[in-house]
Length: 608
Image (tube, rainbow, N blue to C red):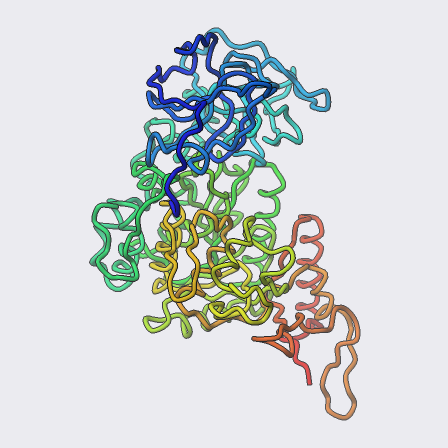
């Protein structure tokens, strides 16, 4: 921590109580039962006595005279750190408003179409398994429960409904655990079912269940074994070693492991996050794309999670189709969800490699999008081009592999991002959630265009990379997952890396910290409709013979004061914000027909 913990208020007192969430209050005439109130770093509102801690270590706070309720942030910024390095929470001696004091919450929001199912008395061999994080979609052939820790509501499929599909969010379901950002959906699974056989092995590992041994393609043991397999294997092990053996940090100063903060992920979780398994039906594709050392020469990479028939799966499917249509390279899809669509087959997608990976724990407090960096680390691509699910590719895109291999080398071992269409800066609404803290380090003067330690314009999180850049990915992901702090010095203010809350923010600040200066033109145009420029009929200048853009968004990406004052060129290799699968399919058809008819214009838009 940047500052020592404050002294406890007079009403606080240390106590050793039972780890059981139903333990009785002790001391000071208190009586009642403890109930979960909020996770660490969230707010708790309590009308009784409040306690902060975990296990047998707690500090209690009572309401002051005349105080209707205690309203406090459950963090070591407010309370002493009674359990350094461990996850903590707030509990209250009175039931939290909005949830009853039993395992299955008995409330339902009037606006929610879902009602509480009666709690099961016996489930036989069935057990609860993580299905989807908050704001994601869960698809389960049986009962679903929503909540976290001691607070749950259960939902069962309607009569005749083969699968229950629902969004796990408080905009659809009751908020059974207010302030708890670890809420998620679990699915009740039957180990003997066909559904069970199709699950991501990662969710089984998280539940301490057995997984097929012959499908695992990455793990700490595999990475350590292959560390001597040439430059790629060495760089891979350098990246993952702090996740695998944190006590044996790499000696190089740039990889030095800093002091961990209180929100560090435990060592078992860090090791498990390095594991992945090839989807069995795609094993032949994997063996064709990957060599005997477990590396692929070059491929596109996507990461996603969501129900097998949900919108994200449909968006991802359109992306996969575009790669098969307009590229000659394979695409690796790293899946961090419950199960993948059964209709995705090697026959339908002969250049698709589908790999399952461990989901991050719902209690980790990290963005799902950090899985992008995990996917880049685990995919073992010598040259890679990362694509989000809301993207598609177009003819000419394979040039990115050639350019990436030439630019990202031993001498420049950093990923390269395309310029963002917005020039993010320290004023106004910025990235990162807690953007003020991010920019305070790089722009202490707070003036646009004069950010002393920002080495290039804000980049869009669609990176390309080679194996030389994998240690960079490992360093910055590790610093976030271990809650390390970038030290103050030379005019820079300290920055706690966990306050860099998204993948794009982490890629940018990591690039600035390491002096990165390379950036791609806008090869990921901001919207599919931008492709009208090369699909519409344009005018040919009779004198110069050049094609003049007169239809569509013909201008450059807006410039900035410091790096690109004349704007940023567009290259029509990929489209971003392709969030409507039907619209995407329409654009893919138009591009295919224009290419077949010889009317598709070249992908680079030049200006005089």
